[in-house]
Image (tube, rainbow, N blue to C red; front, top):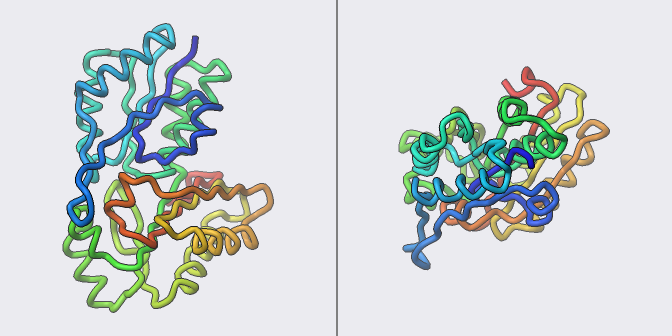
Length: 266
């Protein structure tokens, strides 16, 4: 038996990684179609049932739960409510993150679990990974994010005022904020590569690129990163999951990076 790791589908973990590390993925809900398409967070009842099943599988060794930032979804609050049913055995980690930043923390925690680590060790690894992580989002436009309510009005107005046709956003303290303004995709990718290389401080990183129907662009960013990142770095490319792509619109690129030290991610 071992500690179980649970994420919601916003983490965007590849199926082969889920199988290899035996991570449980709770699917968030995509509703509607076309311009009316939206998402709904998981309920406390759904999550309580999920946690109960995992505790049974793990012989009550415990569950580490990692969910989309509470500023972006109601799922985190539902998870906290659900975990109250299982005091001391279900640990809901406050991620303040989205996408593969959460996925990377889940991978790290699940690896510790497979090596025999207890609940405290798995929780510590998840928190350490999150503390060393950074996430940026490159967008062709802000309309979809603004309509979804995930983008603060001030950020959208500021971006428009700066004529940032292709903005770079950063997830900071769980919320989206403007990180840079670019006029072209190539300049955006050069800026992102510069940011990552500078913060890596010569140490290897794990980088995950997620794209919304923009495979060619994702490959271009990956090539830029791979040509400049320190030896030993790993770059993963994956499609952006529906529960996030609904809000970003087509062409979006997410870049999540786990640095070797916490200082690099400040």
